[in-house]
Amino acid sequence: MAGSAFSTPYPSFSLDFGSVCVHTKRICALCASSPESRAFARGSVEGISGVRERRGSDGGKRKRREEEEESEKGQLYTAKNILVAVGGRPSKPNIPGIEHVIDSDAALDLPSRPEKIAIVGGGYIALEFAGIFNGLKIDVHVFIRQKKVLRGFDEEVRDFVAEQMSSRGVKFHIEQSPQAVTKSYDGLLSLKTNKETISGFSHVMFATGRKPNTKNLGLEDVGVKMDEHGAVVVDEYSRASVDSIWAVGDVTNRLNLTPVALMEAGAIARTIFGNEPTKPDYSAVPSSVFSQPPIGQVGLTEEKAIEMYGDVDVYTSNFKPLRATLSGLPDRVYIKVIVCAKTSKVLGVHMCGEDAPEIIQGIAIAVKAGLTKQNFDATVGVHPTTAEEIVTMRNPTRKVRRDTAAEAKTTHEAVSRK
Ligand SMILES: Cc1cc2nc3c(=O)[nH]c(=O)nc-3n(C[C@H](O)[C@H](O)[C@H](O)COP(=O)(O)OP(=O)(O)OC[C@H]3O[C@@H](n4cnc5c(N)ncnc54)[C@H](O)[C@@H]3O)c2cc1C
Image (cartoon, rainbow, N blue to C red; front, side, top):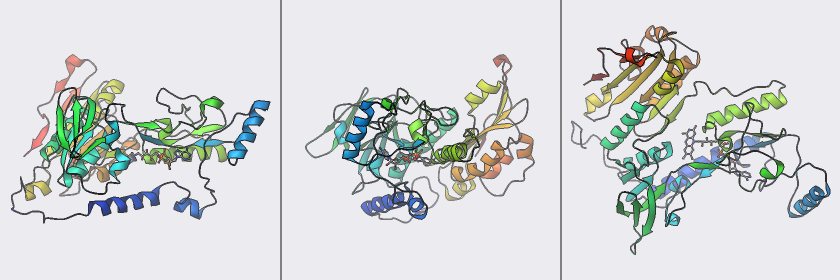
């Protein structure tokens, strides 16, 4: 293998791609919140399929007529509180040839292994699929509209993950917007962007965002406010603009993560049924991107920390982990710890490298608890691990001060261990 000190670090392998997709879907179906799921089967929750609209409560003739019509079509249900948790779905731009492309749902349902794939989008879903396909030795091209992947993530992590993915074989095409997809007589696809046309793709996948599933629910008819993307607008308790309607998860487009949807739902349960008004707490929510290498992050990005706190000390480290040193692989790890200069509180930790998602879960407890850099420094490392770096970063790479003229770069520029 290229970059290895040894001739055959990995044995060759074969893979039945179709079976992997079938197995993956089976696992997803087990986890999904469908009426068939384990939670429904175990508990006292009744699952009803085919729910569509909620009617108004004006009590007028029109309402009665609608109810009569509706009960003819199916069963009409009424409830004191209605919780909307319908999630989102992939959204694709309406360009010529869009019928030839797949989305992330279809990418988990392919009958055979792609030979060469174009992935349009620079968000986490695009990068995760790029990593999976690249790992299967598929020729992967990622097209992003901007200069960098992962908008909203820490700037240096954005650069680092793209570099690492490139070094593993993923080809990035930056500042390119898709304009058309065409299919040739042999079934292969071409992607035309504002800059170039690349042909020979067996698949083109769009990971260009997701839209809340609010179409055809009748929410507008009863006065539920939605934003320009169709997300239900809610207050801090997840209550919509109609008092009896609540919404959680991706349909509200706040922080679209599974554990966050769970937290929001738990807060609503306490608010409505526990007589204990509870707001979900979005501070120090950790998250990961399962790219290759993966990212783990918790707390503020450096940019956000500077905006909110002004004076911050930034500790960074970019190094070759022991495992890569031994194997000769080119893998590296990037870690950043952001500290409030005034209080010494750790405001954010960002990591890109092997096991980052596992490591960040533990670090998130410390950040959520508001621990200081001294607490981190006083913690003994586990040797020899990648994670020990987080508690042994003694000197800041830079000290950013509100008065930018006073920004001091220390002599310890980004620690780079060979
Ligand atoms: C490819 C991909 C990878 C992801 N990876 C991660 C990850 O690693 N970690 C993470 O935390 N998050 C991840 N997410 C995000 C995560 O899946 C969502 O944030 C989470 O599922 C949101 O939960 P939800 O309940 O709001 O919506 P969903 O989980 O989407 O559930 C909505 C449910 O409502 C049903 N529904 C829709 N319309 C109707 C209707 N009209 N009537 C009745 N039912 C309806 C749907 O069928 C579905 O069962 C990922 C998302 C994608 C697409």
